[in-house]
Image 1 (cartoon, helix red, strand yellow):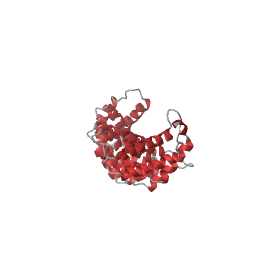
Image 2 (image 1 turned 45 degrees about the vertical axis):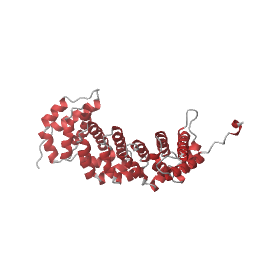
Image 3 (image 1 turned 90 degrees about the vertical axis):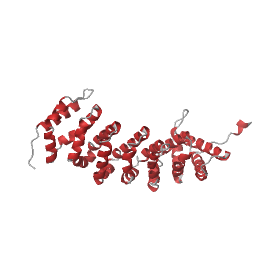
Image 4 (image 1 turned 120 degrees about the horizontal axis):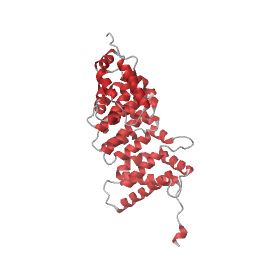
Length: 340
């Protein structure tokens, strides 16, 4: 008989509302988990979050339904469900944290009536970014909050907030944390912040040039950690070679200190660092308005540089690289001293 009276499936909005009620309960509950009721509520919460994930992503039996996703998203951002989920994440078990991270990530892309309502919500609750970024200081939460953060900065207004905040300076330390996974996650977020929204990044780098590149050079390019140096020189090339950052690039390649760092990276034993350093070094060589001190340094080191480039090859044949190298060699070979 029991099978005849199956409960009616909950609507997406009902799942969100019940999740919100359970999160409110968890938020109020003490950190101790002695009561049976609390265990039951936590178990229910885990099931609800898994159901939210199933609606948004689909499952082995069905694809996600656009209308259900829109209703879920609409209800989710009507109240403070996102805030509650982020703040309560440390109290959830590992599986629920993973599911919640996927739910938050997916919601950043969901449109309701052609609007990304997550963006509007985050603009009004931008302090949540402070919570997510500070997660890098908590070993248990770093990867969950980091994944959420990268999805949130898909929204340009959110990325601008993070770039202009004091948190930006912290990334230079997070990238060098001893925990490899957390350091790699922070590096991925840092790269996303500096490459996704071109106009915002160009504005940020122009306004913050001095402190940003002072930190970038000393903490990343001159780091004692090989992986940090390799990632940093690759990202520097991506930034400077982007057309949006042409003014920043011109300024960067006019500095003798920057040239000194790049020449040291060209001498690294690591082939991958050498190649990435070459892609930045070629910008110094190609600059048609080289300052006098840059010309002087290149002439003083001309024979060493030409000797280095004579044996300089990529592992696979690369015609573009060979053409760039030939151009750099011509530029250096033809330099004439300029009167100061």
